[in-house]
Amino acid sequence: MFELKQYDSVKCERHGEHTLVVTLNRPEVLNAMNGEMGLAMQDILRSLHEDPDWVRCVVLTGAGRAFCAGGDLKIRNNQSVREWTQWHEISERNVELRMECPVPWIAAVNGACYAGGLEAALTCDFIYADAGARFALTECKIGIMPGNMGPQNLARAVGDRRAKELILSARVFSAQEGHQWGMINEVCEAGTVLEEALKAAGRICDCAPLSVKAAKRAIHIGLQLDLHSAFRYDLECYYPLLTTEDRKEGIAAFNEKRKANFKGC
Image (cartoon, rainbow, N blue to C red; front, side, top):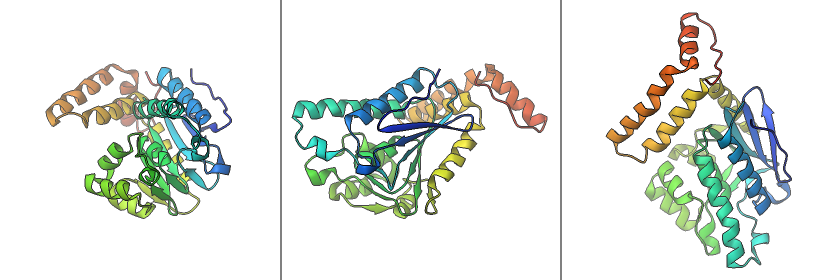
């Protein structure tokens, strides 16, 4: 059973019946990531993998005026290579856990979304952004490169040529540009991004949870396969849904012209 826990650097709240809101909560440093935040996120992700229970969708956002400015470079300033590597291994695992999470994640980006912050947003299933949000993968400016699947996810979102330009020059870009290039699903009026992301989460939560999990998995795995193999994988995800109670409920609700009451079984 998924239980709400509170951490010093991450806040978890339940919204409605089935939405979990996860807020990066170090606003004094623009929600820059430290080790404690990474471990807290890992605990949340592992719990969702083990048993999401009531959670059908997660909205990830940031406290204050930023989504996330990336890694906390003040902490990293004096780290040894060994310490840096240990910290990075936590974030590497979080990338995999979020992308393979059984329930969808929506990034609600409010303000600065740089470096590891943008990489975190890109590991979500899709992104809603405040009209004033700004984005960049800035790692090449400090002698490293994006190391949490940013090169792969950004290239898949905006194309390889655009991704090379953005990463190699550490260029800052707007929410409107990100939307034009296909990285951002929705640009929201100032101050409304969390509200709009929660509406999107509500629409997902109204669908059959086993169907949502199966469809997410089919898309995620299928994009790594050739077209024919991806279609066969679609069918592997499709046929088990026929034996579920939710499939019976969904068809009955449609014919009875009422809202379906899905149980996730």
